[in-house]
Amino acid sequence: MASFNLTPSDPSTFILTGILGLETAHIWISIPFSTFYLIGLLGNSILLMVVSKEQTLHKPMYLLLSMLALTEIIASSTVLPRALCIFWFNWKGITLDGCLTQMFLLHSGSVMHSAILVAMAFDRYVAICNPLRYATILTNARIAMLGLVGLIRAVLFVMPLPLLLSRQPFCANRLIPHTYCDHMAVAKLSCGDITVNKIYGLVIVFLILGFDLTLISLSYSLIIKAVLRIPSKKAHQKALNTCSAHICVMLMAYPLFLFSTLTYRFGQGIAPHFHIIVANLYYLLLPMLNPIVYGVKTKELREKMVKYSCRV
Image 1 (cartoon, rainbow, N blue to C red):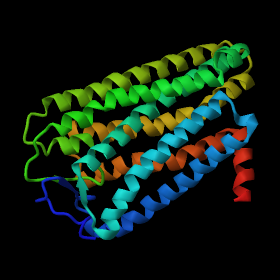
Image 2 (spheres, rainbow, N blue to C red; image 1 turned 90 degrees about the vertical axis):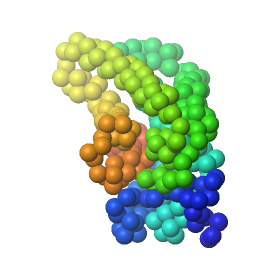
Image 3 (tube, rainbow, N blue to C red; image 1 turned 45 degrees about the vertical axis):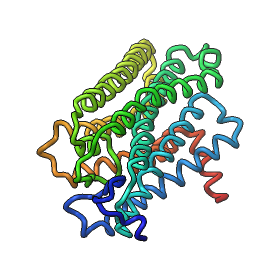
C-alpha cells in the first residue's frame, strides 16, 4: 500500500486530491460513479458483441457506433479505477509518466469521440439526402478509413500536450485538484512559463471542435433542407427520427466537454467540487447513456441487443 500512498515530496510523483471539499463523501460518491461505469461497460460491451456477431448489423452506422462504444470504454476505464483508488483506499500518488499517459488517453479519446460524431452526421446526411447511393458512398472500408483518419488526427493533435508538459519544471506543490490528470490542472503546477500550453490547449478546443461542429451543422442544414422538400409529414417524421439518437448524443457530449475544458481558464467563480464532478460525468455518464439512447431509438439494434441480453 505504501507504494501507492506516496507523498508530494517524492520528486517523480503527483498527488490526485479527489473531489475538493467533498473528501468525507468520497465513499458515497463512488456508488453512483461505479454504477454509471458498470452500466456503461455492460451496455457498450453488449453493443460491441451484438454488432460483431450479427451480419445484418455490419453496416456503416453500426460500425461507427462500435467505434464510439470502444472509445467510451477506454476513456471511462482510464478514469474510474484511478478515482476509486482515491475514494476507497486513499491511494493518491501517480507518477509523472502515469499522469501524462492518462492525460494523453483521455484527451485523444475526446478528440476521437468528436471525429466519430462528425462521421455519424455525414452518415445521416448520405442516408437521407442520397439514399440510393448510400451503399456505394459509405462502404465499410471507407468507414474504417474514416475511423483511422480520426485516430491519427487525435494522436497528432493531442501528443504535444504531454510532450510540452514533460519538459516543464514542477514546483514543490504537486497536488492536482482532480480525480484524474487533466492537462490544465497539471500545467498550473509548473514553475515555468506555460503560455504555450495554454494557447495550444485552446487551439485544440476551438480549432478541432469548431471545425467538427461546423461540419455537423453543415450536414444537418442540408438534411433539413432535403427533408423540407418532402411533401409527406410522415416522411418528415421518419427522416428526422433517424437523426434523433445522434442529436441526443451530441447535446449531451459537447456541452459537458466544453464546460469541463473551459472552466480551468474562464470559470474561476465555479466551485471546484462542481467542476470535478461534471468533468467525471463526461467520462462516465455518456458511456452509460449512449447505448441506451441508440438502443431505444434504433429498432434493429434494440431487438438484437434484447436478444443477446436475455442470453446473458
